[in-house]
Amino acid sequence: MTNLTLSFDAVDEPTPGAKWAGRWARSWPAYEAWFVARGGDVGPSRAECRVSLKHHMPELIATYDKLVTIAGGSDRAAQFLSTWCPPPYLGGCSLAAVADRNDVRLVRNYDLSPDLNEGLLLRTEWTGRAVMGMVEFLWGLSDGINDAGLSVALAYGGRSETGEGFGITTILRYVLETCETVDAALAALKRIPSHMAYNVVLADAAGRTASVELAPGGGATIMPQAIASNHQSKGRAAERPGFTRTVERLAHLKGLQAGPRDLGHHFDKEPLRQVRYSQGFGTLFTAEYDPKLRSLLLSINGKRWHQTIDGFQEGQHTADYSHTSVSDANVSMPIGSESRDDWSQAAMIDWTRLAVDYAAGRGQEISAYLPNTLASKTEAA
Image 1 (cartoon, rainbow, N blue to C red):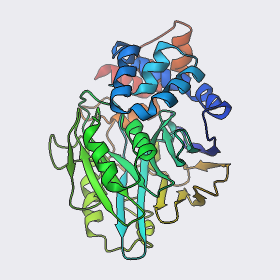
Image 2 (cartoon, one colour):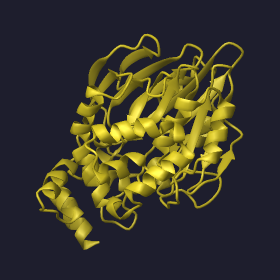
Image 3 (cartoon, rainbow, N blue to C red):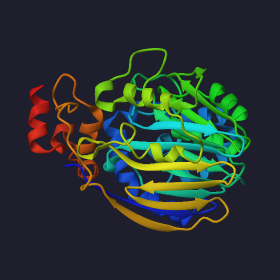
C-alpha cells in the first residue's frame, strides 16, 4: 500500500563523493526495478547515451562520467543517468512566477505519491557554479536555483507519448549549471529536446519571468503568463484531467491577483494544494524561490525550511501525510478500470520487493507487486 511518510534530507556536497554514493546505494534498487520494468534495457545503448549527452549538454559530461564511475560503472547505470530517451514517467505540480519593482518569486507545488519522490534537497558546485534544488533521478532537478538567482521548476505536460530527447530533470540541471538569466535559459530549452511534454516556469534576479511548453522530441512554445499546471495549449488533450484537476488549477492561477510576497500563501489552499496522498496525488512540498536573495523557502506538510545558496544548512525532516490524506470519491479512478490512473497504480507498487526479486532472478508480472485486491482487478481488466 502507499506509504504516507517521506523523509526529506538537505545535503551539501560541492563535488560528487561519499554523500552522493550513499544516496545512489539507497535509491538505485528501486530506480533499477522501475527502469527494467518500463523497458529501459531496450533503449539506446550506453555509447549512444553518452554521445547524445556530450552533443547536447557538453558542459555536463565530466560530471556525468564521474557519477557513472561512483555508481559502479555498469551499462545500465550509465544509460539511466544519461536520461537519453528514458522510459515515460508522470507527475503533477502547479507553478507560478510573479515579479514587481522590488521582488520576484517562483512558487511550485509538487504533487505526487510520497513513494515516488526522493526527498532530497541537494546543494552542489559540480561545474563550478553553486546550485541547490530538489533532486529527481539522482542528479536531475525538478526545481532549483543557482548562484546567479536563476530559478526554474517543471510540471508534467499531461500526456504520455514520448519522442527522442532527454529526461526533463537533466535538462533543468543543465539550465541551472550553465545559465544566469531567463533569456539564456529559454535559448537552452529551445535547443535541447525533451523526451516528453513538460511545462517549465522560470524567474531571474532581474525580475524576468517566463513559462514555456516543451513538446516530446523537441519544440518550445513561450506562454503569455508565467504559470503552469498539467496540460498544454497544443497537441493532444491532457490525460486524466479530472483526476489531476489540471484545468481547474490553471484557471485559478490565471485569476490570482497576488504580489511576489503573497504568492506562496495561495499554494497552501485548494485547488492548488492536493491532499489525496493515498491515491498517489498529494502536495508533498511547496518550494518558494527568491531569485534576488538566492533563497528557498521549503514548506513540507506544515514545516518550513529556509535555505540560501551561501548559507545552506544540512538537516532532515520526516513528513507524515496520513493525517491530511483524504479520499475523494468524485475523482477516484479504480485500478483496473478503463480510466485507471498511472499515478495511483505506480504509487501502490512495492518497488523494493520487485527490485529484490529481479536481482535474485525471480522477476514476476508487475501485478504481483500490487496489493492483492488491486492486483486481481488489474488482471481482470
